[in-house]
Image (cartoon, rainbow, N blue to C red; front, side, top):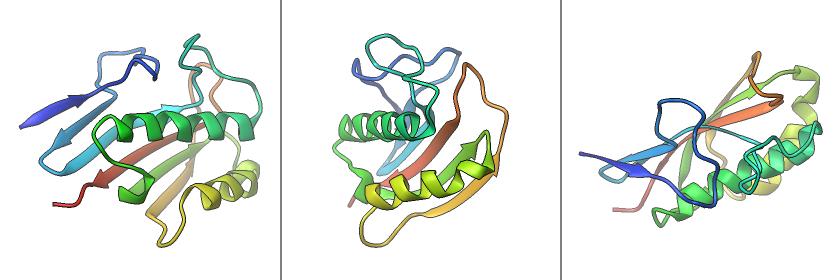
Length: 126
C-alpha cells in the first residue's frame, strides 16, 4: 500500500505527482530542487545555495515519516552543468556521513531555473 509523504515545510509539486511515497518501510522521494518553502521559488542562481536548500527539502520530507539522511540508500543527481560537480560533491559529502548512498549523477536540462535536482530512495529500519 502506498502512503503519501508531504509537508507544509516543502513547496507543493508543480505537477501531477506526489512529493514522496512510502511503500512498507521503503521511502521514495520525487526529485527535489532548491525551492524556498516560503515562496515556492528557486532560492538563488547559486549552485551551493540551491544544493543546501535541496537537501533541506529532502531532510524535511524524510523527517515527515520518521527518517533521516542516514536512511538514504540511493540518490539520482541531475546537474545542469557538470563543471558544478566538485561544488556539489563538497556539500554532498557533508550531508552524508559514514557509508554514503549509491549515486548516479547526470547532466540534465532542468526547469524553473534549477541547477540541481536530487531523487532519493531510502528505507527505514524494520
